Length: 399
Image 1: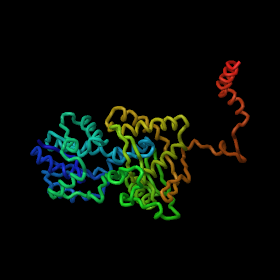
Image 2: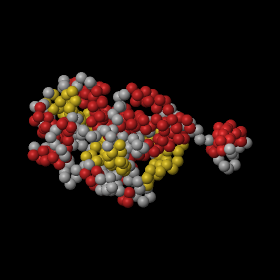
Image 3: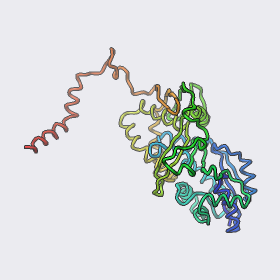
Image 4: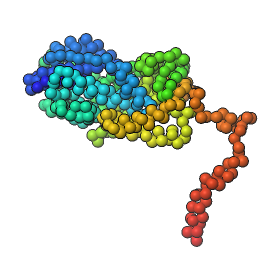
């Protein structure tokens, strides 16, 4: 058996390499990607090979992650259950496609992941594998092995001299990429307990953030972020810069009890400064340039698009069809949004666009008002005709 493992270097995948070799005498190839996490690929390579991997692959997919996954989700206003910007969810189909390509290159017959039996990632990986390579066998050791807790895994790692980043004092599971950080386990499993400061990786506490905050201007072209404070940057550079700016102003902390795909509720803590800032700015610009009907329809569509991502259906025909609509909806989403970042808050302070459908002469209550107030009477008569008929019916039925 030759297995290509989606390898992160965390507790589960570190143990999996040794476990697969022991249980199945499998040859294990470790595959990882650089999508913005701080891990040094050379350190991961050394660790994977020392743990027993026969080969190690690492691809830098940061730009692809931004252009092909993050930007479409941003344009769709995709937030799962109104809060989660889907950082982990978006990365899984990208990683899975790399695992499949590596399996074909290595002539492996099996792919594997380190997801648990009650999490969402198992679905995301395995649906992606089915879409892309249904001929490959899929293994999920965490669903099958004899360990019943992370503490037992840590003991196995200690026994076999496997270095892992998790300790009994800090038993958090942390997933990190350009778009955000997901943090779970440990004390966070009690939804009443406030997250301790040591769980946060990139954001300062609001009470330690600058008292005056910070103002920024984010520019967009057709729904794609293109500048900060008038300076043109690539979308990836913008995400990296806004992560830094938002983090020092305590922006981007999300504490959410969410509904997992498997049917249970889970308390998750996220850090996503760039995602919070860009989603806030992007939606505000859409309010300025979109007609009422288009904006409201996108409000209806966004949760469904987010759910497709969360449920692991990135490669589905439905998602690709929705992308056609979303791309067309962005043709006028060009302009700038001014934001105030203040102790954890991301506040809209201004917006402008050459394609704005806001007309000050129609909106004003001051001199220069061009709205025809006399037209309102006829409008109300026509618009209110159903209300008049309903009211007449109710009065007749009361008699």
